[in-house]
Structures are given as structure tokens and as C-alpha cells.
Image (cartoon, rainbow, N blue to C red; front, side):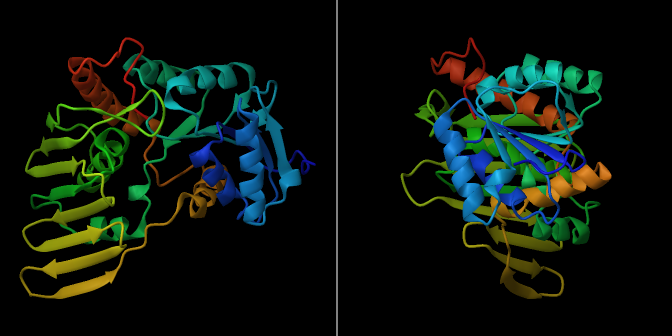
Length: 327
């Protein structure tokens, strides 16, 4: 049973594994809301309802649909569908409904032309939009940005095993953009392992190797190798004076001041998706603002990333005629 129509209205477009975690977070909102969940798979709708109930959400607040609604108003739509169908779902929702704000999952789409047309759809319909690259929201990274001097050259290094570049590079490249204050990098290079591997999602591929970006004096390096081992993600952010080494899996940070010799080991909290989406939703609905990157900001990075991976995958014999098969 929906709450009165004067309360905020949310739509979840695609509610698989990631989407259901977004939905769980909304159960933590104190304010009553209307929630529409859309997924073509009945099993996904059932799982979404179960997960919402697991965290104390009132399942009677959910409207479950297997097709896009029409003639509705939504204060916020969260798109967590597969990347290959996300653009068509955006067109369908925007064409038949009034949508004020959108939060997109990454990877946004699988075609560069879809990125550009989506920007036009958002502008034409007056929709504000953000992309779920959450590291610029994480308090620990925000504190690093506050205390590191970008007047000095900054180096960001991300190294690890088995997390995959195709599915995760956007997160850390966005972190670099956040730290240096721009998405318009001067040079990109890559050195990928020649063998590509099937991703967890059917029809998509994962890539391992190295990505390097330079912007003025600032440098970014991301390297991930495949070892069939425990996933490891270590981030080092440094300038001439300060060094921050973060182990994201263990949620630990080691800080070193190279001038004073000070060293500290502290907890570095990485919140779960089911613990943060409610903050984004409340901020967007109440103020029209959000700490995540805007669609336009993320679109600049997505365009370069899609082009890079599509060129590489095509050279490895992967069919990219329908887009870049990453997610």
C-alpha cells in the first residue's frame, strides 16, 4: 500500500544484485516515500522485496512492475539495470513520465553515442543526474583531498589483483579527477594483458593490465593482475610531503609525513552500498545536490574509457559491433 502522493516518489529501474542493495538503503530513510521497482525478471522483484524486508523495510511501500510505468512523476529514479539496456530504459522512462532526478550506476552505457544522446535527453527534460562513483563521497578520501596540497605534483597509484579494470577503472579514475579537480586529462595510455576473460555478467568481458594518465604534473597509475586469488585493492595518494596508503579490503590507512616523520595507522571505512544510497537520495530530493559526480562530469571519463576498452577488445577479436561489452 503506497503512502500519500505528496511524499517523495522513487523509481528503481533494474533491481538485480546492485539495485537491491540501493533499495535496502532506502529502507533506512525516516521519511515515508513511495517506491516503484521495475525489473523484467519476477525473480529479481522477489529478491528485491525480500532484501527490503530483511533490513526492516515495509514491503507494502513497494510497487513491483515488470514493465516501465507511464504518466507518473518521480523525484528520483535509480538506474541499476544492465549497461546494455540502460539507454533504452532511460528513453522509455523519460518519454512517458516526469522525472526530476536520476542516479545512474556505472558503467553508464556501452556506446559512446548513447552517452551523448542521453545528455541531450536529460537536458531536454530538465533532469539532473549523477553517477554512482562513490569514492569522492567517502569521508576518508574527502579528508585526503582537504589536506593534500594540489599545488605540488600528486601521484595516485592503484594496484591489486582480480578486481578487474573494465568494471572498476571508472571508480578510481573518478577519484583522481576529484583530487586534481578536472576530468579533462591531457594523456591516457594503456598496457593490457592480451587475454581477455569473461566477466561475472554474461556477455561481458574483464580486462587486466595497466592504465596510466598524466595531467600536468599529476600522475595516475592503475594496475590489476589476474591471479585467481583473493581480491586486493591498495591505493597510494602522495605528493612531495604526504603519503596516504589505503588498503580498501582491510579498510586501513597508513599516513606518512615525509618532513616531520609522523606516521599513523587508522581505520579507513568503506561503507556498503546498502548504507549510503539513502544519503544521496535525501540530499538530491531536499537540496538538488549530491556529492557524487554529475552525469556530465562522469560522461567525460566514460567516453574515454569506453573508447579505450572497445578499441582493445576489438583488437582481441571480441565483437564490439553493438557496443563495448563491459559493465
